[in-house]
Every structure is written in structure tokens, then in C-alpha cells.
Image 1 (cartoon, one colour):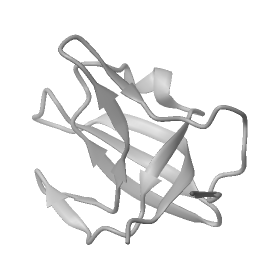
Image 2: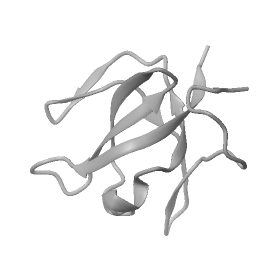
Image 3: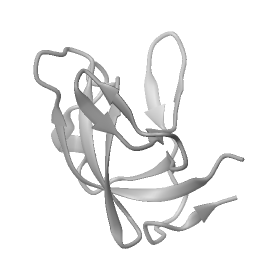
Image 4: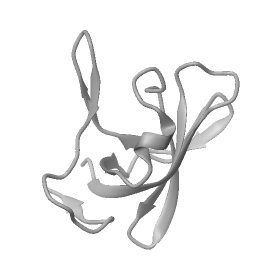
Length: 98
């Protein structure tokens, strides 16, 4: 069963030696998680700080280009763009998405 929750972006930066990867520090309730996402060509890291995103939180940790990732940020995409799945209204980080 997939566990989805709201996470707040605390920091975001490009992964060294990668054109596609961003490394996020996400506040998920009382914890901070690191997540790597392949969206650097679509988003400026500074723009992401403070945003609320939807996180798949029960995935096994994975190493991507040597950086540990603890979850996956949900996005929608078409041929031209990638957009984050976000809550309609402001809600606390860690809130369950049902």
C-alpha cells in the first residue's frame, strides 16, 4: 500500500555532476527526509524552498548518483512540462494524503 503525505521543502540544491537531479530536504511532520528528484531541468532550486509537495514516503531508500533518497515526490508531466502535485490549501507537513 502506497503511503502519501504532505511535505514542506526546507532546502533544495542541484546534485553535483548531474544536469537532471535536485536534492531536497523535506519536513515531514517531525522528521526531515532527503529526496532526490530528476527535475532540475524544469525547476530552479531556490523556487522550491517553502513549497508543499506530495511525498511517497514508504519506499525503500535508494542511492541515486551516490546520494541517498528516502521517498519520491509526485509530479505530473506532459511533453512540455513537469508540475508538482500539491495540496489545494495550506496544510501541515506530515498530513496524510488519502
